[in-house]
Image (tube, rainbow, N blue to C red; front, side):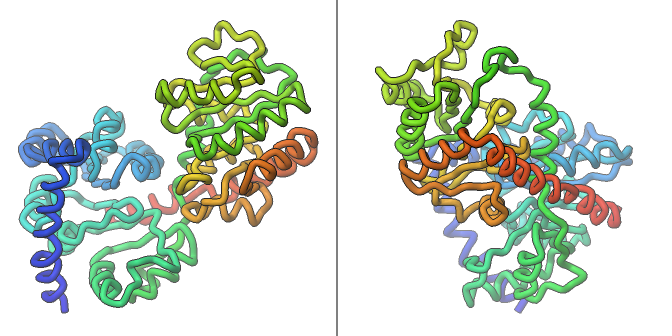
Length: 425
């Protein structure tokens, strides 16, 4: 069976996948950039590895993209407090690689080679990791098998296995049974996920529920964000703030209308809206939505603030800090496809509101069950819930306390993962 799956993957999956990637590179700039970035990958790895201390242990972290890498950072930064540890970070996507090349806690940053057996063996022979940590789901079989052949401990961290996962389809499930068998340790975010992996024949010794490092990461970042002072303290004195983060046009069709109606009833409410894509056209569209009703100002002109009721964020990378000013948060994406990170707001102890498309977020589901989260499905529900929250300070604080306690209760996954990794070193 081992030989069958190896031949099947390398004979029937890898060749057409390689052709598809090369073809996509002709039309997609992101794919093209990834292909180009991998051309000298081995030469660069040899050069970079020669400058690291060979007496140190090397831990290799792999993430698909930037979002998954955020979950790796708490682990990496704690490991680097231990003397004698080098860190190699790899990415599948150009966005992760480009945005992390200067990450100060990594000794080497690289693309992951395309998943052929020869590439995987050559990669392992060059970097010689003492352990490998794969974040969430980006499992490449030839690299897994190569590490197994070289007796390198492999960890799948922040792992999830949904009840309706496509990996459970009959033929695909048999392949993953063999693949998961080659991973040393699978550390899941919940007991339900651990049980899901056990359906693939994973053992109790192999699988353990330790929690999700996203909670640790968002908590770490919130401590830093509180000291940024993006906005003058006196600017919103006596005001109540709704922060709408990572909003799409489909979100804005609902919340902008609801806020306009709310602003008529409550002269102290202010909206800070951070579009997911702050293009000039998008910013102008938001401004036009309020034309004649409410005054707006862009964040870059905030030094000229004259009590405008709507502040439009025209830069990126500051959303987590903006939530520090919020009394209530709306998390975008719920009227498009998938909602964004609810934890970035919940960590500050505020009610979290979002649209109906939240199946991608276990945290949103749990916040709803606990009462710290609120689902809205249309303009009417948005207005009714916003008005209730802003009119009732006691209700607002009660829901906020639930959100805060939810994050606090789930801290600590990083330490548990570190304990598992250190057992192998």
